[in-house]
Each structure stands twice: as C-alpha cells, then as structure tokens.
Length: 113
Image 1: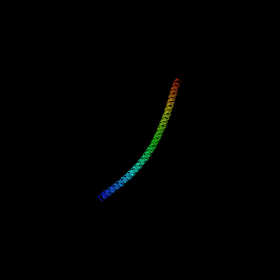
Image 2: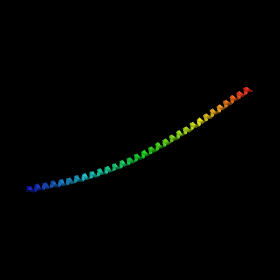
Image 3: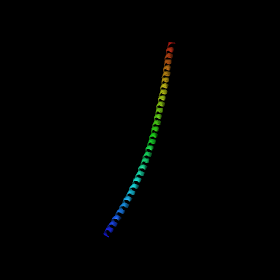
C-alpha cells in the first residue's frame, strides 16, 4: 500500500511539473512574440524618423539654395546700381570739364577782343 501511495504522489508531482513546464513554455513563446512585435514597431518608427529627417534635410537644402540665389541677385543688382552711379558720376565730371573748358575759352576769347 505504501508503494501505491508513493507512486501516486510521484505521478501527481510529475503531472504538475509537466503542466508547469508547458505553461512556462507558453509564457516564453508569448513573451518572444511580444518582443518581436515591439522590435518590428521600433523598426518601423525608426524608418519613419529617417524618412522625416531626409525630407527635412531636403527642405533645408532647398531653402539654402533659394537664399543663395537671392543673395546672388542682390549682389548683381548692387553691382549694376554701382556701375550706373559710376557712369553718372563720369558724365557729370565730363560735363563739368566741358563747362570749365568753355568758360576758359570764353575768358580767353573775351580778353583777346
């Protein structure tokens, strides 16, 4: 009878350990699936962040290009304005020199009469 009770207790203990191992294996499998899903979501988030960063970098590049073009246009316009002013100043000097020469000529002609 003792053997029967000992064997029954032993069988009962083995059945609990098998059930416990099965539950542990199921929990481990669930945890692995959750970890896989979390890694997949993280990968998708990183990919999205990378795409956003590339888009922002492209926008910044376009803004820099536009600013450089605007600056070049401003420099060109300033150069043209400076050239126009220099031409005007040159014409004014030329006109003043002619006027002075005419006055000197008139003065010389007036003295010789």
